[in-house]
Amino acid sequence: MKFFFHILQWTIRFSVDQTNNFFSFMNRLIFFLCAIFVFALSVNAQELKISPKILNLDCSKPRGSQEITHVMLHFCSDALHNPNNPYSVQRIADIFEQYKVSAHYLIDREGNVHQFVVEDRMAFHAGKGKLPFEPNYENSMNSRSIGIEMLAIGTEQEMKMFMSPQHYRKIDQKFVGFTEAQYKSLNLLLKDIQKRNPAVLYDRKHIVGHDEYNTTQRSDPGSLFDWKKIGLRRER
Ligand SMILES: [Zn+2]
Image (cartoon, rainbow, N blue to C red; front, side, top):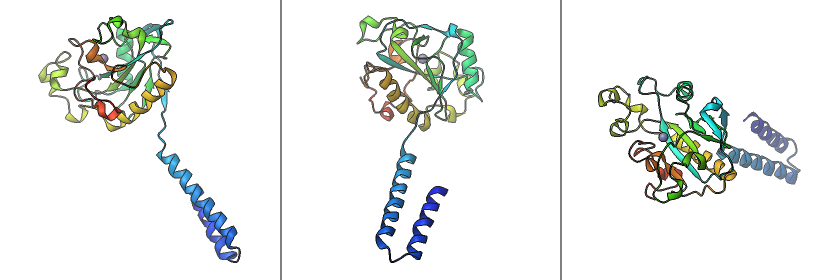
């Protein structure tokens, strides 16, 4: 900001000192307006920042030669053990390492993107399942996809497989659902992933929820996830 203030001073000073040199003043004014324009563009441009927080290598394995064609979305939290503080990234990393599971990325409530596993390794996030429109992918989504976890909690019904309704009611409502910052980062991250993996088409056949792959044992990202906010529709 200081930089623009100096340019403004410089433009005004020139106009006072040398009013006879109108064209040179106009040049400075145009330069000043261009500087404002560039500044406005840079403020508007959204940048994706990925912080590496790589998990132990026994939470993933080499992917092999299979092409990445899908992205799978998930939610996770520590609400079972810490209903009042369910979103510690460190706790989630510890739990993943303890159970030897993983996802490539985790987006926290503030929209920060943490990388748990590099994309050319297979993360253990999908487990067993089947997509109705991809019969050849049965139980093989780990090898074909990138997994993105978002720190979020679903509805009482969706969380029933993890906790009792009594426990769910201990969770503050502010922790339920997704944040705008998460949607913003997810949009950027998906586009970034696509650049590296062009076979991941930006549609509902290639960007899927865990709950669509394992319809009986998984409920994430669930009904509170708004697909429209990433430019897609819930229905495939
Ligand atoms: Zn999941």
